[in-house]
Image 1 (cartoon, one colour):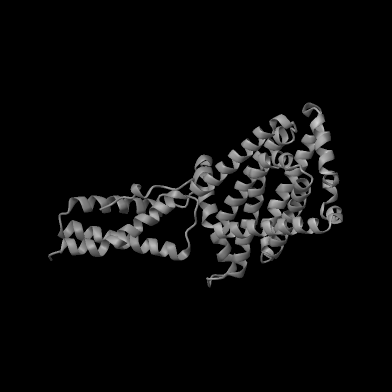
Image 2: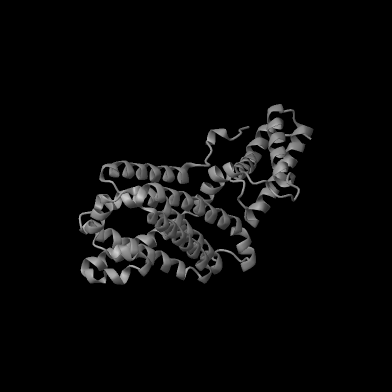
Length: 336
């Protein structure tokens, strides 16, 4: 049998490239659970590439292509059989720098809907307060009664006190951290109610922030507000949005759009992603709590620019991390 090598490579190379791409995606996000269709496709490409390798070794002498396919088959075999059913060891650094941001990006539409709902709530709160300032007390919960104080009076009082004497501020920060952790978990868990309560929680918390922001800005305390909220809020609010993102992923799974799988099967596909997102949000809230305790509650006018700068750098770093971390250059792909 004579094998037309050029024609054979032209015909089969797209399948080899597809297998390489699937392997690259899995390496970029080791914790990702492929769908049933993707797993079947991977197995088909693995078998087809193996058959191509046999043909090349038997009927042709193209050493470079043979070496490439041998390497590709070895990687695919390792992906299929290496773990042997054993638990994959947890690598915290790899999880933080690859798995978490890759999982976040895979569900970016849910995140956009989460942050959009929050912002609509914020706009509603600010608008309502601008139309009727007497509604302020109705919007602010009892546990945040200090926010009912006139902003300028609070700023004057806060700036006169010594930070070291503010033991109560640490308690207040712990309360906020506990509250935000509960909010984040609740926005995820309520996704089991087809996302309705997830959206309500995001809207409600957005309304509260909108009321507070309008109140302080209208009273001429925008610098204080930014220096107070930005250092910890640059991590705290995105963590809540990620909780909402997870809740909306659950909601979509409950509806089962675009699949004929049973509910149990659908949830088995997103289980790892949900755990990754909520764990990442928890890590972000821990850092936000530390920043709030030791920086955000330090109200001294001379340090406002430093606090704002710190918060802005944090926010920009988080955006870059979530959008870029875990990506690999296309130039790293093998070629025949």
